[in-house]
Image (cartoon, rainbow, N blue to C red; front, side, top):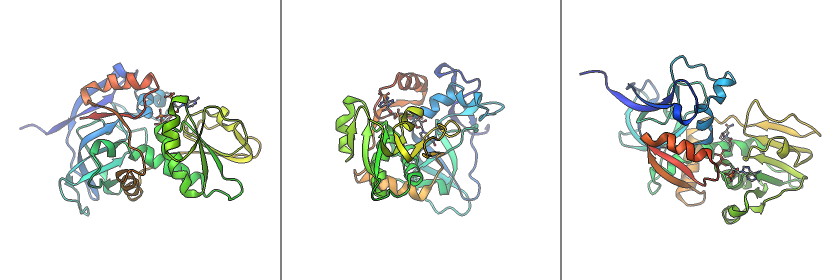
Length: 305
Ligand SMILES: NC(=O)c1ccc[n+]([C@@H]2O[C@H](COP(=O)([O-])OP(=O)(O)OC[C@H]3O[C@@H](n4cnc5c(N)ncnc54)[C@H](OP(=O)(O)O)[C@@H]3O)[C@@H](O)[C@H]2O)c1
Protein backbone atom coordinates (compact mmCIF):
# COMPACT_ATOMS: atom_id res chain seq x y z
CA UNK A 1 0.00 0.00 0.00
CA UNK A 2 1.26 3.49 -0.83
CA UNK A 3 1.51 6.47 1.50
CA UNK A 4 -1.98 7.71 2.52
CA UNK A 5 -2.90 11.03 0.96
CA UNK A 6 -5.65 13.64 1.14
CA UNK A 7 -7.02 16.26 -1.25
CA UNK A 8 -6.32 19.95 -0.93
CA UNK A 9 -6.79 23.07 -3.08
CA UNK A 10 -3.62 25.08 -3.76
CA UNK A 11 -2.09 27.49 -6.24
CA UNK A 12 1.28 26.85 -7.87
CA UNK A 13 1.41 29.84 -10.18
CA UNK A 14 -1.20 32.23 -8.77
CA UNK A 15 -3.49 33.75 -11.38
CA UNK A 16 -7.01 33.92 -9.97
CA UNK A 17 -9.72 31.23 -9.73
CA UNK A 18 -8.55 29.34 -12.83
CA UNK A 19 -5.14 28.80 -11.23
CA UNK A 20 -6.54 26.85 -8.27
CA UNK A 21 -5.65 23.15 -8.44
CA UNK A 22 -6.85 20.25 -6.33
CA UNK A 23 -3.98 17.91 -5.59
CA UNK A 24 -3.19 14.92 -3.37
CA UNK A 25 -0.61 15.39 -0.62
CA UNK A 26 0.72 12.95 2.00
CA UNK A 27 -1.03 12.62 5.35
CA UNK A 28 1.08 14.01 8.20
CA UNK A 29 0.99 12.76 11.79
CA UNK A 30 0.44 15.37 14.49
CA UNK A 31 3.51 16.20 16.56
CA UNK A 32 3.51 17.02 20.29
CA UNK A 33 0.65 19.39 21.24
CA UNK A 34 -0.80 19.10 17.70
CA UNK A 35 -4.07 17.74 16.38
CA UNK A 36 -5.06 16.27 13.03
CA UNK A 37 -8.56 17.33 11.99
CA UNK A 38 -10.83 15.96 9.27
CA UNK A 39 -12.22 19.18 7.85
CA UNK A 40 -15.99 19.37 7.31
CA UNK A 41 -16.26 23.05 6.36
CA UNK A 42 -13.85 25.78 5.21
CA UNK A 43 -15.12 29.28 4.35
CA UNK A 44 -14.01 31.33 1.36
CA UNK A 45 -12.72 34.66 2.69
CA UNK A 46 -11.60 37.75 0.76
CA UNK A 47 -7.96 37.04 1.69
CA UNK A 48 -8.13 33.73 -0.19
CA UNK A 49 -8.99 35.57 -3.41
CA UNK A 50 -5.99 37.83 -2.90
CA UNK A 51 -3.69 34.82 -2.29
CA UNK A 52 -5.00 32.96 -5.35
CA UNK A 53 -4.63 36.15 -7.38
CA UNK A 54 -0.96 36.50 -6.46
CA UNK A 55 -1.35 39.78 -4.53
CA UNK A 56 0.78 38.63 -1.60
CA UNK A 57 3.27 36.86 -3.84
CA UNK A 58 3.70 40.23 -5.56
CA UNK A 59 4.30 41.93 -2.20
CA UNK A 60 7.04 39.39 -1.41
CA UNK A 61 5.05 37.92 1.50
CA UNK A 62 4.76 34.46 -0.08
CA UNK A 63 7.80 32.59 -1.34
CA UNK A 64 6.66 28.97 -1.50
CA UNK A 65 8.87 26.97 -3.90
CA UNK A 66 6.18 24.52 -5.00
CA UNK A 67 2.63 25.43 -3.96
CA UNK A 68 0.73 27.83 -1.71
CA UNK A 69 -2.08 26.60 0.53
CA UNK A 70 -5.49 28.31 0.53
CA UNK A 71 -7.94 28.83 3.38
CA UNK A 72 -7.63 30.27 6.89
CA UNK A 73 -10.45 28.89 9.02
CA UNK A 74 -12.22 25.56 9.34
CA UNK A 75 -14.42 23.30 11.41
CA UNK A 76 -14.25 19.53 11.58
CA UNK A 77 -13.59 16.54 13.78
CA UNK A 78 -10.41 15.42 15.55
CA UNK A 79 -8.94 12.26 14.01
CA UNK A 80 -5.56 12.01 15.76
CA UNK A 81 -3.69 13.80 18.51
CA UNK A 82 -0.03 14.23 19.39
CA UNK A 83 1.55 13.91 22.82
CA UNK A 84 0.10 16.27 25.42
CA UNK A 85 -3.31 16.75 23.79
CA UNK A 86 -6.40 15.59 25.66
CA UNK A 87 -9.08 15.55 22.94
CA UNK A 88 -10.98 12.39 22.02
CA UNK A 89 -11.18 11.32 18.38
CA UNK A 90 -14.43 12.66 16.93
CA UNK A 91 -14.44 15.85 19.04
CA UNK A 92 -15.90 18.70 16.95
CA UNK A 93 -13.49 21.62 16.72
CA UNK A 94 -12.96 24.87 14.81
CA UNK A 95 -9.83 26.90 14.33
CA UNK A 96 -7.66 29.35 12.44
CA UNK A 97 -4.36 29.03 10.59
CA UNK A 98 -2.79 32.40 9.95
CA UNK A 99 0.07 33.79 7.92
CA UNK A 100 0.41 33.98 4.17
CA UNK A 101 3.55 31.97 3.48
CA UNK A 102 2.47 28.35 3.85
CA UNK A 103 2.09 25.31 1.59
CA UNK A 104 -1.03 24.09 3.41
CA UNK A 105 -4.42 25.56 4.21
CA UNK A 106 -7.94 24.76 5.28
CA UNK A 107 -9.25 24.10 1.74
CA UNK A 108 -8.38 20.47 2.41
CA UNK A 109 -9.73 17.18 3.66
CA UNK A 110 -7.27 17.26 6.57
CA UNK A 111 -5.14 19.65 8.54
CA UNK A 112 -2.57 19.39 11.35
CA UNK A 113 -2.73 22.35 13.75
CA UNK A 114 -1.47 23.28 17.22
CA UNK A 115 -4.10 22.31 19.80
CA UNK A 116 -3.81 25.82 21.27
CA UNK A 117 -5.21 27.28 18.01
CA UNK A 118 -8.52 25.38 18.06
CA UNK A 119 -11.63 25.34 20.22
CA UNK A 120 -14.33 22.77 20.80
CA UNK A 121 -17.56 23.58 18.94
CA UNK A 122 -20.49 23.74 21.38
CA UNK A 123 -23.25 21.21 20.88
CA UNK A 124 -26.10 22.91 19.08
CA UNK A 125 -23.81 24.80 16.70
CA UNK A 126 -23.35 23.18 13.30
CA UNK A 127 -19.88 22.77 11.81
CA UNK A 128 -20.73 24.89 8.74
CA UNK A 129 -21.81 27.83 10.89
CA UNK A 130 -18.89 27.30 13.29
CA UNK A 131 -16.38 27.38 10.43
CA UNK A 132 -17.35 30.98 9.63
CA UNK A 133 -16.35 32.25 13.09
CA UNK A 134 -12.57 31.84 13.60
CA UNK A 135 -10.98 34.24 11.10
CA UNK A 136 -13.44 37.10 11.26
CA UNK A 137 -14.60 36.67 14.86
CA UNK A 138 -11.01 36.71 16.10
CA UNK A 139 -10.16 39.56 13.70
CA UNK A 140 -12.95 41.64 15.22
CA UNK A 141 -12.04 40.74 18.80
CA UNK A 142 -8.45 41.77 18.09
CA UNK A 143 -9.63 45.00 16.42
CA UNK A 144 -11.55 45.71 19.63
CA UNK A 145 -8.26 45.19 21.52
CA UNK A 146 -6.54 47.72 19.24
CA UNK A 147 -9.37 50.20 19.86
CA UNK A 148 -9.14 49.58 23.61
CA UNK A 149 -11.72 50.76 26.13
CA UNK A 150 -13.73 53.73 24.89
CA UNK A 151 -13.13 56.99 26.74
CA UNK A 152 -16.46 57.87 28.40
CA UNK A 153 -16.62 61.28 26.71
CA UNK A 154 -15.29 60.20 23.29
CA UNK A 155 -16.89 56.85 22.48
CA UNK A 156 -18.43 57.32 19.03
CA UNK A 157 -17.14 54.49 16.80
CA UNK A 158 -17.88 54.20 13.08
CA UNK A 159 -17.55 50.66 11.73
CA UNK A 160 -17.21 50.68 7.93
CA UNK A 161 -18.40 47.56 6.09
CA UNK A 162 -20.66 46.74 9.05
CA UNK A 163 -22.65 44.28 6.92
CA UNK A 164 -19.47 42.31 6.18
CA UNK A 165 -17.94 39.54 8.23
CA UNK A 166 -15.29 41.58 10.09
CA UNK A 167 -17.43 44.71 10.36
CA UNK A 168 -20.47 42.81 11.61
CA UNK A 169 -18.48 41.23 14.42
CA UNK A 170 -16.76 44.53 15.32
CA UNK A 171 -20.15 46.21 15.55
CA UNK A 172 -21.14 43.59 18.13
CA UNK A 173 -17.87 43.18 20.05
CA UNK A 174 -16.79 46.83 20.34
CA UNK A 175 -19.80 47.48 22.55
CA UNK A 176 -18.16 45.24 25.17
CA UNK A 177 -15.42 47.88 25.40
CA UNK A 178 -17.86 50.76 25.85
CA UNK A 179 -18.03 51.98 22.25
CA UNK A 180 -21.25 53.45 20.92
CA UNK A 181 -21.29 51.94 17.43
CA UNK A 182 -22.64 53.19 14.12
CA UNK A 183 -22.31 50.91 11.10
CA UNK A 184 -21.62 52.23 7.60
CA UNK A 185 -23.09 49.87 5.03
CA UNK A 186 -25.20 49.68 1.87
CA UNK A 187 -28.83 50.82 2.10
CA UNK A 188 -30.10 47.24 1.75
CA UNK A 189 -28.07 46.19 4.83
CA UNK A 190 -29.86 48.50 7.27
CA UNK A 191 -31.96 45.80 8.93
CA UNK A 192 -28.94 43.56 9.53
CA UNK A 193 -26.79 46.36 10.97
CA UNK A 194 -29.52 47.68 13.25
CA UNK A 195 -30.15 44.08 14.33
CA UNK A 196 -26.61 44.08 15.73
CA UNK A 197 -27.67 46.87 18.08
CA UNK A 198 -25.71 49.49 16.12
CA UNK A 199 -26.77 52.76 14.58
CA UNK A 200 -26.79 52.82 10.78
CA UNK A 201 -25.64 55.16 8.03
CA UNK A 202 -24.92 54.89 4.31
CA UNK A 203 -22.98 58.13 4.26
CA UNK A 204 -20.81 59.20 7.19
CA UNK A 205 -19.67 62.74 7.88
CA UNK A 206 -16.23 63.35 9.48
CA UNK A 207 -15.81 63.74 13.24
CA UNK A 208 -15.85 60.19 14.68
CA UNK A 209 -13.80 59.41 17.78
CA UNK A 210 -12.69 56.18 16.12
CA UNK A 211 -13.12 54.32 12.83
CA UNK A 212 -12.77 50.54 12.41
CA UNK A 213 -12.32 50.04 8.68
CA UNK A 214 -13.87 46.70 7.67
CA UNK A 215 -14.74 48.10 4.23
CA UNK A 216 -11.06 48.95 3.56
CA UNK A 217 -11.81 52.58 2.80
CA UNK A 218 -8.27 53.47 3.93
CA UNK A 219 -7.52 57.23 3.44
CA UNK A 220 -11.22 57.95 2.99
CA UNK A 221 -11.92 56.16 6.29
CA UNK A 222 -9.10 58.02 8.04
CA UNK A 223 -10.62 61.31 6.89
CA UNK A 224 -13.76 60.46 8.92
CA UNK A 225 -11.78 60.41 12.22
CA UNK A 226 -11.70 63.57 14.35
CA UNK A 227 -8.35 65.20 15.20
CA UNK A 228 -6.59 63.06 17.82
CA UNK A 229 -8.95 60.09 17.33
CA UNK A 230 -8.16 56.47 16.39
CA UNK A 231 -8.21 54.48 13.15
CA UNK A 232 -7.90 50.69 12.98
CA UNK A 233 -7.42 49.19 9.52
CA UNK A 234 -7.33 45.64 8.21
CA UNK A 235 -4.47 45.92 5.71
CA UNK A 236 -1.20 45.71 7.67
CA UNK A 237 1.71 47.23 5.79
CA UNK A 238 -0.68 49.33 3.69
CA UNK A 239 -2.33 51.38 6.42
CA UNK A 240 -2.89 55.09 5.65
CA UNK A 241 -0.27 57.53 6.96
CA UNK A 242 -1.25 59.22 10.18
CA UNK A 243 -2.42 62.83 10.13
CA UNK A 244 -3.98 65.35 12.57
CA UNK A 245 -2.72 63.43 15.64
CA UNK A 246 -4.76 60.32 14.78
CA UNK A 247 -3.52 56.98 16.16
CA UNK A 248 -3.34 54.54 13.23
CA UNK A 249 -3.17 50.77 13.78
CA UNK A 250 -3.67 47.77 11.52
CA UNK A 251 -4.80 44.31 12.46
CA UNK A 252 -2.64 41.21 11.99
CA UNK A 253 -5.00 38.45 13.08
CA UNK A 254 -3.55 35.58 15.12
CA UNK A 255 -5.00 32.25 16.33
CA UNK A 256 -6.32 32.12 19.89
CA UNK A 257 -8.11 28.91 20.83
CA UNK A 258 -9.48 30.00 24.22
CA UNK A 259 -10.88 33.24 22.85
CA UNK A 260 -12.37 31.41 19.87
CA UNK A 261 -14.17 29.17 22.37
CA UNK A 262 -15.91 32.24 23.77
CA UNK A 263 -16.88 33.47 20.30
CA UNK A 264 -18.30 30.06 19.38
CA UNK A 265 -20.34 30.02 22.59
CA UNK A 266 -21.75 33.46 21.76
CA UNK A 267 -22.56 32.21 18.24
CA UNK A 268 -24.28 29.09 19.58
CA UNK A 269 -26.43 31.26 21.85
CA UNK A 270 -27.47 33.43 18.90
CA UNK A 271 -25.80 36.53 20.36
CA UNK A 272 -23.35 36.69 17.41
CA UNK A 273 -24.50 36.14 13.82
CA UNK A 274 -23.32 33.17 11.74
CA UNK A 275 -24.02 33.83 8.10
CA UNK A 276 -23.68 31.19 5.40
CA UNK A 277 -24.47 32.04 1.79
CA UNK A 278 -24.02 28.55 0.30
CA UNK A 279 -22.19 25.30 0.96
CA UNK A 280 -20.32 24.00 -2.09
CA UNK A 281 -18.09 20.98 -2.66
CA UNK A 282 -14.33 21.56 -2.74
CA UNK A 283 -14.37 20.76 -6.47
CA UNK A 284 -16.32 24.00 -7.04
CA UNK A 285 -13.79 26.21 -5.27
CA UNK A 286 -13.06 28.24 -8.43
CA UNK A 287 -16.79 28.99 -8.92
CA UNK A 288 -17.04 30.15 -5.30
CA UNK A 289 -14.03 32.46 -5.76
CA UNK A 290 -15.57 33.92 -8.93
CA UNK A 291 -18.87 34.55 -7.13
CA UNK A 292 -17.19 36.26 -4.15
CA UNK A 293 -15.08 38.40 -6.50
CA UNK A 294 -18.25 39.97 -7.91
CA UNK A 295 -19.01 41.51 -4.48
CA UNK A 296 -22.34 41.94 -2.76
CA UNK A 297 -22.40 38.42 -1.28
CA UNK A 298 -23.76 38.37 2.29
CA UNK A 299 -22.66 35.40 4.35
CA UNK A 300 -19.83 33.08 3.43
CA UNK A 301 -19.45 30.50 0.73
CA UNK A 302 -18.34 27.44 2.68
CA UNK A 303 -16.38 24.64 1.01
CA UNK A 304 -17.13 21.03 1.91
CA UNK A 305 -13.94 19.02 1.32
N1 LIG B 1 -5.51 42.06 8.63
C1 LIG B 1 -6.14 40.97 9.05
O1 LIG B 1 -5.62 40.24 9.91
C2 LIG B 1 -7.50 40.65 8.48
C3 LIG B 1 -8.28 39.64 9.06
C4 LIG B 1 -9.55 39.40 8.53
C5 LIG B 1 -10.00 40.13 7.42
N2 LIG B 1 -9.18 41.08 6.89
C6 LIG B 1 -9.64 41.89 5.74
O2 LIG B 1 -10.75 42.64 6.15
C7 LIG B 1 -11.50 43.00 4.98
C8 LIG B 1 -12.98 42.73 5.23
O3 LIG B 1 -13.18 41.33 5.27
P1 LIG B 1 -14.65 40.73 5.33
O4 LIG B 1 -14.51 39.28 5.37
O5 LIG B 1 -15.42 41.42 6.38
O6 LIG B 1 -15.20 41.20 3.90
P2 LIG B 1 -16.72 41.27 3.45
O7 LIG B 1 -17.53 40.26 4.21
O8 LIG B 1 -16.72 41.27 1.98
O9 LIG B 1 -17.19 42.70 4.00
C9 LIG B 1 -16.82 43.92 3.45
C10 LIG B 1 -18.08 44.77 3.47
O10 LIG B 1 -17.75 46.12 3.17
C11 LIG B 1 -18.77 46.61 2.31
N3 LIG B 1 -18.34 47.80 1.65
C12 LIG B 1 -17.30 47.96 0.79
N4 LIG B 1 -17.21 49.24 0.39
C13 LIG B 1 -18.22 49.90 1.01
C14 LIG B 1 -18.66 51.24 0.99
N5 LIG B 1 -18.05 52.17 0.26
N6 LIG B 1 -19.74 51.58 1.75
C15 LIG B 1 -20.37 50.66 2.50
N7 LIG B 1 -20.00 49.35 2.56
C16 LIG B 1 -18.94 48.99 1.81
C17 LIG B 1 -19.05 45.44 1.41
O11 LIG B 1 -20.26 45.60 0.70
P3 LIG B 1 -20.34 45.08 -0.84
O12 LIG B 1 -20.14 43.59 -0.80
O13 LIG B 1 -21.72 45.49 -1.23
O14 LIG B 1 -19.25 45.80 -1.57
C18 LIG B 1 -19.10 44.32 2.42
O15 LIG B 1 -20.38 44.23 3.04
C19 LIG B 1 -10.90 42.19 3.84
O16 LIG B 1 -10.04 43.00 3.10
C20 LIG B 1 -10.13 41.09 4.56
O17 LIG B 1 -9.09 40.56 3.79
C21 LIG B 1 -7.96 41.36 7.39
